Image 1 (cartoon, one colour):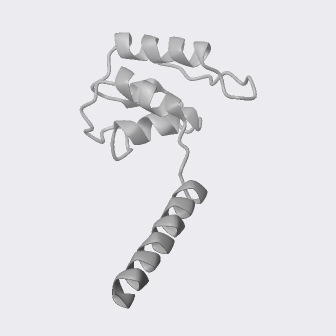
Image 2 (image 1 turned 30 degrees about the vertical axis):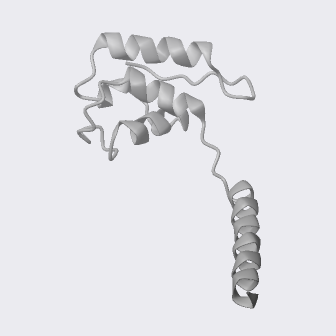
Length: 101
């Protein structure tokens, strides 16, 4: 009976510790990364110099990407949609990301 109580108490404490740690250590990512990734062709070819479309989208938001044409499989329809999205969704400080085709 003591073993059951000990294991139950230990399991409860560890569960509370995990719940606390998950809130304390959670990673909050910019939802615009996923939205821009959906506007890209989605081939994940790496021709842009980034390991995939998600990394390229993050590079766009961090203003590391000067020209959207770095995405080789992309077309004007992709580039125009991304430019419009960036105009409609500026940074939290109101800064509009400038990038060109």
